[in-house]
Length: 164
Image 1 (cartoon, one colour):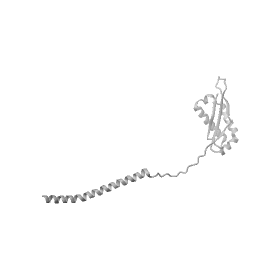
Image 2 (cartoon, rainbow, N blue to C red):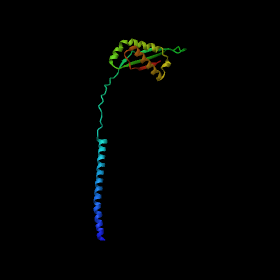
Image 3 (cartoon, rainbow, N blue to C red):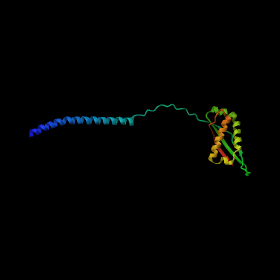
Image 4 (cartoon, rainbow, N blue to C red):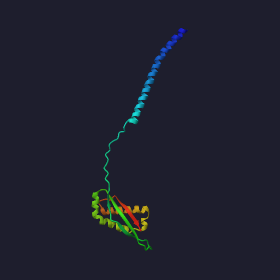
C-alpha cells in the first residue's frame, strides 16, 4: 500500500508540477499585460503633452473715437407745460479706423444738423429710462450713417447726457 501511495503520490506530483508551471506562466503574462497597459494608460493620460494646432490669430485693431461738439437743444414741451426743457449731451462716434475718421470730419456739419433736427423733436418722456436712451442711440446711429454714407459708424456713444 505504501508503494501505491508513493507511486500515486509521485504521479500526482509529476502531473501537478506542469499544471502549476502553466498557471504560473499565464498569471505572469496576465500581470505583465495589466502592468504594461496601466503604465501605457498612465503615460497617455498624465505625461503625454496635448497636441495643439497653431491657429493664426487675427490682429485686433482698436476702434477710433471721434468726439463731436457738445449738443444743447431745447426739447418739445408737452401741451399745457410752459417750462422749457433742455437736453445737453456729449457724443462720441466709434469707427473702425483712422481713415474713416478723417473722411467723416469734412461732413461733420451734416452730422450735427441731423442730430439737432432730430433732438429738437424729442419730448422729455422719450428720454426716460435706459430703454429711451437705447432708442435714442439707435436712431442717432442710423442718422449718422445716412449722413456719412458710404462710410459707416459702428456706434454712437454717450459721454454725458443731461435732461433738465
